[in-house]
Length: 453
Image 1 (cartoon, rainbow, N blue to C red):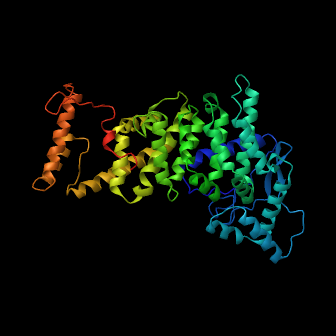
Image 2 (cartoon, one colour):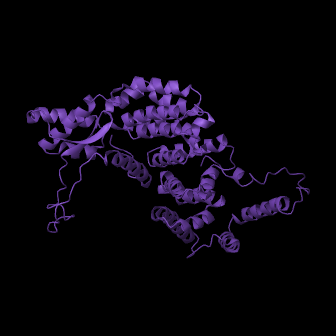
Image 3 (cartoon, helix red, strand yellow):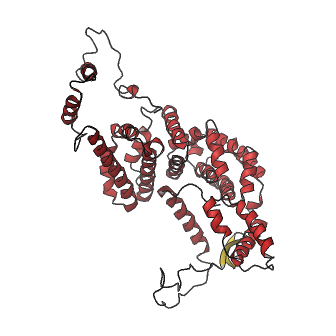
């Protein structure tokens, strides 16, 4: 199924994993192919004579569990142009494509339309697990959600994982009508209920990873995504999966949340989901777990880099989409939440991985931060504001606000800071003219900020 989320850096890991799996399964069954001698330099590749890409005349097919190559030459005579265009238009409607991609498909030559149409119909008529109707998958998901985790039974874990992987593949590759039927039969609720009912052992297993994969595949369909986002607790339940120690599951959840930030109305739902996760996991701040995972070492280089890349991709998405696309104050406010949790020294440490993909996300975070601070400085008629210097920021505020109605409020704020320092740093316990104060220093900062913003 065509992926309709906007192109995002977090989707590359999923594509790489899919390609690697497919390649490993067909490598041994394919004959050795020798490349022809290099032709004259034409177009974008020496192997291709014209600027047109080579025509694909073979496709990968599933024959009783064994993948092989099969010629795409149609076995049926091509119908009339009018009939073929009608059949192909109906087929394209099933793909849930954007208007631009739909137009590209409909403009293909008749021969290619017929090849694609015959190949798709042959796949749909094949006797594979994908022939199951949506009701079958929904029943299986509901049944699995009621079963305890099969401790010391790896085969049962693999069996449950295969069942969910079958649904994930069906949601990604079956016609659009399959997804609509799955939604109409309350498949979204079945998936979310299964997620929320998981016990601890299931949450750490591949079963959890595959279940999140089903939701991810469903949300690559416009109707599927709309129904998940319309669910009153859908995104909250997905965010709860961040509590797992399974790196693949955590990455998939971050990819979903990051992609939803790009969807109209999705950014606010992601912020609300992170606020829910803060309460669910009893954390001090809504992004505390995210920053902790960014700093934590898994001991496995590939897993560690992939997770940290997904986290930085999510952070950049939540900072720069939604209101953050246009609103400087919003970006500054949200970024300060991460800075107050200590993200800057963590970013400095991540440079040690020397990973090109991760470094691009780190560079983007720091580039936007630098640009925002320059814009903030211009508002104060300064060339630069050193936000790491308390003296510099105080002098800037004093000069800017002196002889203005706001100056008394600045003094009041400083007096309150002095009072809280007396309680927290100097340990006076709040004994003074104001009386006994009961202040929790761990939550002092966060109680002054509306977490819904």
